[in-house]
Length: 350
View 1 (tube, rainbow, N blue to C red):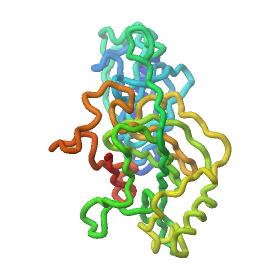
View 2 (cartoon, one colour):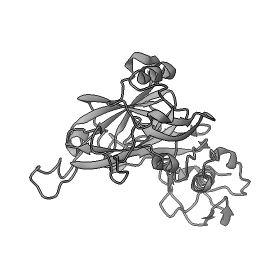
View 3 (cartoon, one colour):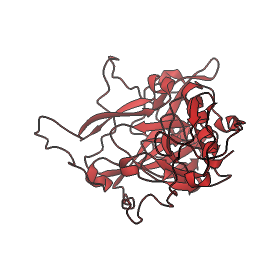
View 4 (cartoon, helix red, strand yellow):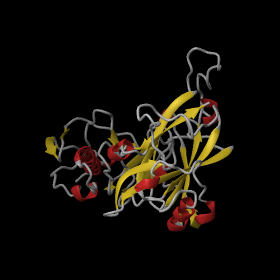
C-alpha cells in the first residue's frame, strides 16, 4: 500500500474509532492492516492535511505508523514534528486535536476506487498533495516565528482525586482539589476557594493525579505549553492530604468536597527525574493528558502579551461594561462522565 494511502487509511480508522468507541480503549493501530489494493497518492479535500479529533469518550489512540508531520492545532499552526516509517503517534486522547500533513511525493500515482474502513473515503485519479513536507513549521524561512519562551511568575497545585464506594472500593465520582463544582445550593458555580490567576500573567500549574486513571485536562479560554511530567509517591502524598481531613480521609465519601484548600504541593513526594513532553506535545495545547501517579506541569498564560503572541487586548479596564479575558471560566477532565461527576472547577481571571 502506498504511504499516503496508508496514512489516510490509518487516520480514518482512528477517527472512526475515536468517534464510536465509547468507554473502551481505542487501539487504532490494530485496525491499520487493512488490505486495500492501492498504491499511490490521493486527492484530499484538505490538500493532504488530515484533522484528527479525540471525540470519543476515554478513547485513547494506540498507535499510527505513517509518514508525515504531526502538529498540535493552535494559534498560527504552532508546534510540530516529523514522523517517519515505523514511528508511532500515541497521544490523541479525548478532547485533543492534531493535524497530519501527508507526504504526497512518496506516491506519484493513484489507483481510483472507494475504500471502506469504518468510514468511507475515495482515492481519485487526480493529482493529490505533491509538496514536500517541511522539516519545521516555525522559525524557518517564510514561516511564523519560533514559539516564545514562557516564564512563570507563580506556581499553583491542582489535585485530581476520586471518591470510592467503601463497600466495593470502586470510584463513584471524581474531584479537582476534592471540591464540588457547584456551591451549597447545587445550582451555581462556587465563587470561593477557586483558582484566581491575575490577568496577563504566566503561571505554572502542577496537576497532581492521585487517581488510577489518565485524565485529559482541558482549560477554557487559554492555551498552554507542557513543561514536563514526574512520578510522585502517591500513597504518601494522599496520606499527607488526609492529615487535613477528618478520618477516614480520602477516598471515603464522608470527606468528599472538603478540600483541603489550596491543594497541597507535591514537591516533598517527587520520585525520579522529570520527563520532557513528547515532540508532538511541544506546541500550544488546550488539553493535556495527566497520567496516574504523576504531576503534569504546564505553563499557562492568562493574556495575549503574557503568551508572547500578538493580541488585540490584554484585558479591559475594570470600569468597562464588557470584560474580555477577565472573568470566570472552567477547567475539567474531558471524559464526559468525569466532568459531570464532578471533575470540573470554575476559575477566575482577575
